[in-house]
Length: 328
Image: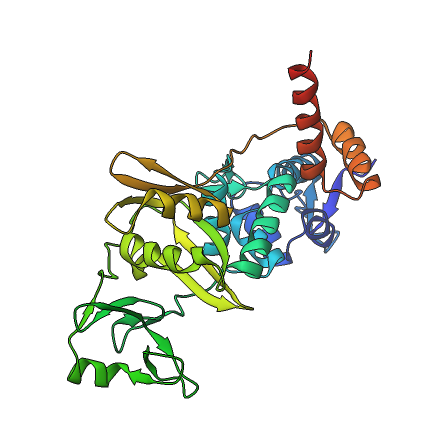
């Protein structure tokens, strides 16, 4: 049996560079073989220390990848991974960041990495990056409701020239600036609220612009949440919005009918009444399951034979089991 490794062999075993090998030696993590007569001409390191360090590294790697590593694999920035961890309420283990280090890092398991990837894929496909309805220069928002001359209810729109204004009838368009100068124009509600400081993810909704619910929900987003707390855009004839989860004080716009309409168009998350507040929050709960490697691989194969991810397959099996228990 080989009793020592060359520096090149150590580098290959530990997956590091030659300078790092000598750095480990200086820190006392591995020991160089004594060669008082300099007969070999090649540095050799004791097998026992190198093998121990290799096992420690494998254990750290097996515990899970760091946030930075997961971000690189998913092609996103680390803060997006942190956002997903918070939104999914994942229970992430902490391990030493390197050999004999007191500094800790997150160790994200393969299952958690898949869950994070699925979450970010959903957000990338559906979530707007900013509030496209709001115009900071004019401090108004598309489809915002106003009173004209104290009695006529009108909504802010854009004409074919992309100008803000109001359609008084099918043909007459009144530009917003002209309405300010020549008419008594009054917003029916404010569109600003304090930004929710607690980051707990988003509630996503989609509603057709041709539905009655569209205008009620738009009014709720502006008057209850404020433009600071949601991102939105009009996409393929639908309002696609993501509301920052939190606690919002209700007002005259936040009717029971508006609440029911909002609940019907939510894609992910939920909204419910809590006293004098609307509460937007996550609607699911995360349960972390740990399997032996052989069991995990067997379950993964079962899921793949049915064209499902392991998470989807597990959820389905648990739901079926729940129904069986209920029907006993």
